[in-house]
Length: 238
Length: 238
Image 1 (cartoon, chains in turn brown, blue):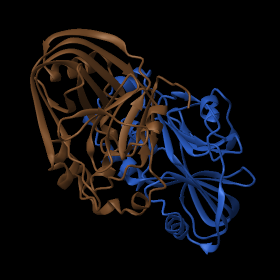
Image 2 (tube, one colour):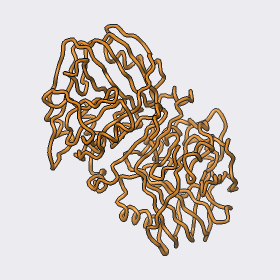
Image 3 (cartoon, helix red, strand yellow):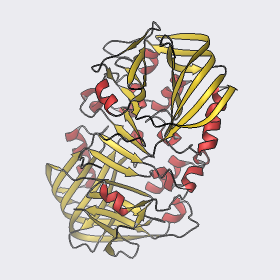
Image 4 (cartoon, chains in turn purple, red):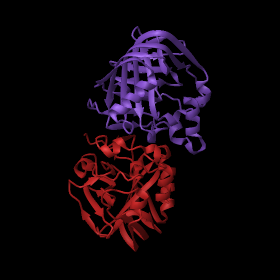
């Protein structure tokens, strides 16, 4: 486990969440061994995780932000060692404008990369799913029990990962953004925002290190051919 | 680059071959640094590669088998460090029976793994594509120029990789088998065989190390949204 800044680590797949394989199959200590920066969700879709500077913050469905311990487990997560380079400064830009400009400047559409946007955001809307317990239900049913949080104006950090479309289902095809405010009192999976003024940084990866929960019996024995993976995912993401 | 026997390395994607991104973007020396066992194809779909015990054999469209050098480049390839365990002995089994038995015994349907089958094969049918030159055409057009080779009875090695269906397009979903005979005079991408009598070994991976040719301008700038990736692949594989 060398500190490699061109590799994005991923545990699990987006697809395994669809039928409800929500067991936490990776401890946070292992995720942190692969990076000081990342996103994920806990067992049973227990909130939204964002790792900044090696600290794993969880936003739960009450909206509370806490730092989780090394034994916290995750069914699906990404991490990498931060080595961002400044790309552009934006003023009153929409999220879509930032996304599009980054793609245009990096020619990164077929590449895994991360964006980090720091600054002031308006009309921020995030969500965090409530942890469900066993037996786990499908992603669609589990995600129904979520909370939505909003802030009119907030200083914070958007941490996003971009995955090429051919990896849709393995990862989240396109951008997947989480958010945490500077005071560590507000955040989650970013559903949308109005405008952002601040700094946009990027880090490009040449490698996806895709780790699978091969020792988890539920995962091993699940018959994915019976699931409408892509259909359900696009409904959940929509 | 540690010698990790639970990681499967992949350079490129199956998908990038579809529109004809056939530039050799990885030298053999780098592929061999990630494994002593593997499969792949050369620039312009230059034959079928099979790496056994650290030696990279190429079967070209004339049917000739040669060992290629470190500077030989590949658009798409897999490698790993061999650490197989014996799984079963088969007698007059079809390839489908071997494939199915391995899946049943390993519960490996959602897992990347490799199979190595050594023994005597009947009615073996392989193919090798002829190298095309720039400007490269699509996979379908390029693969039209291929040779098919057959042997009634031959001793040899089947080296295959299995990838979970959600990775179809990234890799070859299901099994992808190459073949080399013991005399190193016959081989290629395995289209089919009659019966096999011999030993079946498996090696299970928990990680796919997916490397992309992010510095290749043609890859960077290609608009995959205009390609019918899955449609074309299933036609080519059929």
